[in-house]
Image 1 (tube, helix red, strand yellow):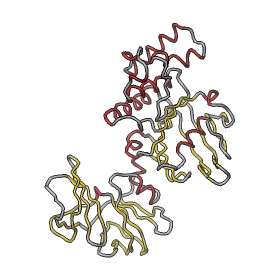
Image 2 (tube, rainbow, N blue to C red):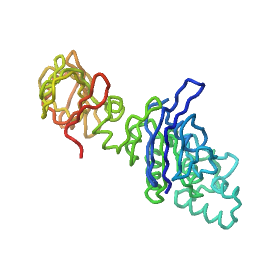
Image 3 (tube, helix red, strand yellow):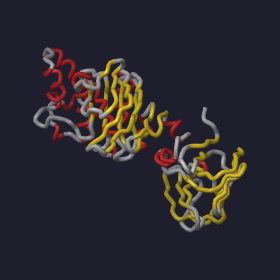
Image 4 (tube, one colour):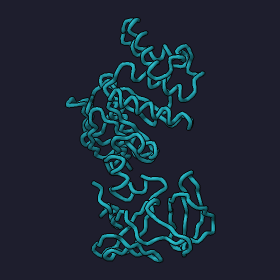
Length: 353
């Protein structure tokens, strides 16, 4: 199990385009670490630098205690899975799986045993005679994963591995990746822009924006204790509700909005964030239902009072319709408070242990 360390890694393109800015990150041996952020955040650049496909402008990359900054991808013994399936179209599935072992001149009996073992493990033994053009997206990705794991690499790198797979197969491939990690304990670095996907697979999340790390933590930590406004808005669906106003003791006030908090704070200008599931509504009031989204057991309500909009997730125990008038209970027991000047987290309630 290989530990990966990035020390002060910076990547600059064309002299002034900063893709990564002084990244310091340690990925533990055997960890499944998800690098999550919007398009253009620097996620894939970070992955390519770990792989050796890009060279940092500044900084060093270590595998365990060995400096690999100047070594080739082959010397690093990594395997990569991309969103575009890297299969040889003129070869059968068997030949695709066998290729890397054949290049390394392993004996034919060993190659045959290894190919059939990996194919059986991935549930693609029945596809060995077929060519990539006859495979579904999910089948092709399974073969690509098989090509990666057949030689037991030190590090497993995944760049948007579910992006080009149809919805019914996404869950299937996601659970296969989790099974691989659980049973093989590869060190895995998984890059995605999809926060639902990232939250569901990560042991630890690295949130990145504009080439800089915003927060590192477990999915629970990042959701409950976002380090700043960007993380608060980026993580969680539907989005967190954010309001700018004034905090006085245990009361937060904005225009036509008043929240009573279970704890007192010094008076200051502040931004308060409340997740949709932490807001309670009652029949009758001064909030108008503008939209209703039923999600099976839950319902998502979009409310307005003329000045503010509010997202509320509630159990669908009654029927709601556009135009209904609802009241919002002004006592809240879970929230985050941010600085309006820096965007950084000031406090959360309750504190997460």
